[in-house]
Image (tube, rainbow, N blue to C red; front, side, top):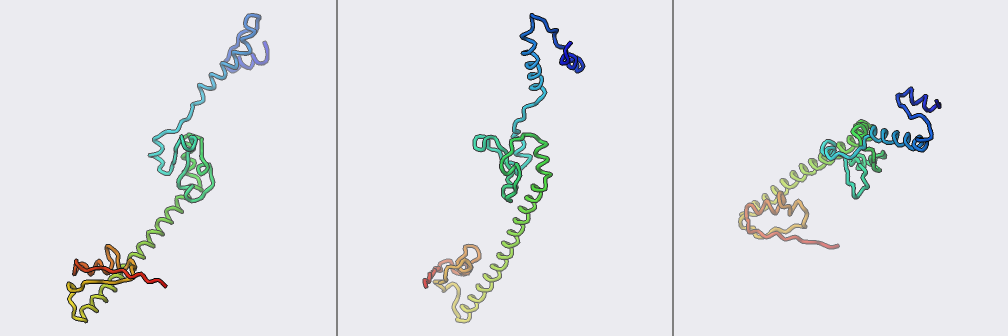
Length: 192
């Protein structure tokens, strides 16, 4: 008995005795049997469409990206990891490892900080604009009242076209038009 047969016997694989009838099959069949067994043991991993719902940051576009998966958060933050260049390892464990990675956590934190900063800036600008609009409206109404002109008799309002003056929601002309809907708004563009 050859060494290979002894080893195979230890692992529970019996190989046929080597004789003239099956000499050709000795070399062909073991490789074939082992290959089919390996194929049976190794599960082919495919992308699961349910991952797109579960992992909102995951991007997958097979025809365009040659079946690569990407992390939109890491790409947006400029990180360098397999999910920014395209990952082909389809497995839940790969996705979980990516979620737990420091790169991904930092990317999420950067995005959150950027969004909250932008929101704070918008709120600050909005409250400043409201204060300026209110002050300008009050000042213009005071000037009109000081001249003893009723607001419904004001036929025209001229401005430089700044959003504070002509804004559709809180602009001075819009607020004055509430007192006189027939008032005309004139925008004067000055070139220097």
